[in-house]
Image (cartoon, rainbow, N blue to C red; front, side):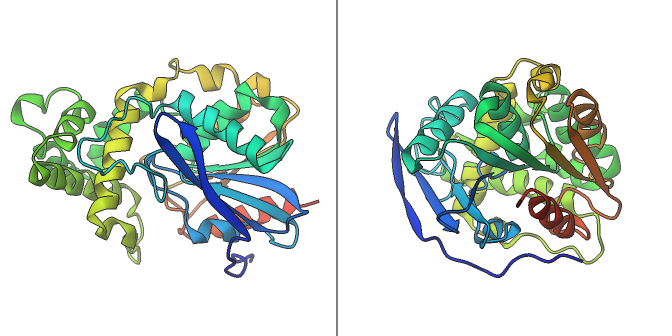
Amino acid sequence: MADLFAPIEPYDHGLLDVGDGHRVYWEVCGNPAGKPALVLHGGPGSGCTPGARRSFDPRVYRIVLFDQRGSGRSTPHASAPGIDLSTNTTAHLLADIERLRTHIGIERWLVFGGSWGSTLALAYAERHPGRVTEMVLVSIATTTPAEIDWITRGVGMFFPEAWARFQGGAPESDRGGSLVDAYHRLLMHPDPAVCETAARDWCDWEMTLVDVHPSHKPNPRYENPAFRLGFARLVTHYWRHGAWLEDGALLRDAGRLAGIPGILIHGRLDLGGPLVTPWRLANAWPGSELIVVGGAGHDARDPGMTESVVAATNRFAS
C-alpha cells in the first residue's frame, strides 16, 4: 500500500506575466535536477494545493505546479467584482503552459492532470505531443456537452433531493434549459448577495457528487466564500462554452498520443464522471492503461486512489 510522500515546500516560485492582465502563480518542488513533471489542477478554478506535490517522489522528480488563470494565487482572481473572463479560455491556458515551460527551462515533461486537469492535459498533449514524456490522468473527463449535461442534469437521478435543490437555485424560467447558463448569469450578477447564494448552491451540488462514502468529509476549501465564487464562475464559464473544444475532439485525436505512455486512473463509483469516458479513451490511445479503482468515486481522497496515483508516478520515475 503506497502512501503520499512527505510534505515538501517549493524551492522556487513566482508570478509569470502571461498577458491580458493576468499573472500566473507557479512553483517548483523536489529535485532541481530531477525528472520534470507538470501538475494540472482540476475545476476549472480549483488552484494547486500543497497535497498535489506529494504524489511524486521528491528525490526523483522536479515537480512543477501552477494556478490556472483566475485560480488560487494567480491574479486577478475570478471572484473579483466586475471580473472579465473573456481572456480565460482553454486556448489561453494551453499558451500559458508553454510560456511557463519555456520560462522554467524545461524541454519535455510528464503531464499529470485530475478531473478538469485531465481535459487540459489531453488538449495540451494532443497539441504538443513532442513535449510530453508520459501522462498520468486521474478521474478523467473530456468536458463534452454530453458529460456536462450528465453532471448537471442526468446524474440527478442518483441524488434526487440534492438535484431538486440545485435546480431550484436557478430562476424558475431557466429550470428547463441549461442550468450552467442560468447559474453563470447569477454568478456574474452585480449584486454580491445573488453571487454568493448561487456560488453556495453550485458548490453544494459539486460536493454532493463526490460524496459516495459514509465517512466522506467535504473538502474544507468550500468553506471559503472567495473560493466558492471564483470556482463556480470558472466552471460555468468553461462548461457553457464546452471548454472551447470541438465535441468529441479529444477522443477523436487520441491517436496523436501514440508513443506517449499513459496511465488512466478512475473510480468505478464516479457517478459524476462515468467510467465509460476513460474506457473509450484507453481504447483510442495506443500505449495507455486504464486502472479502475473499485471502491472510489471522483474524489482523489477516496480509498485506493492515492495508492494508484503514487504507484503510477513511481512506475514512470525511472
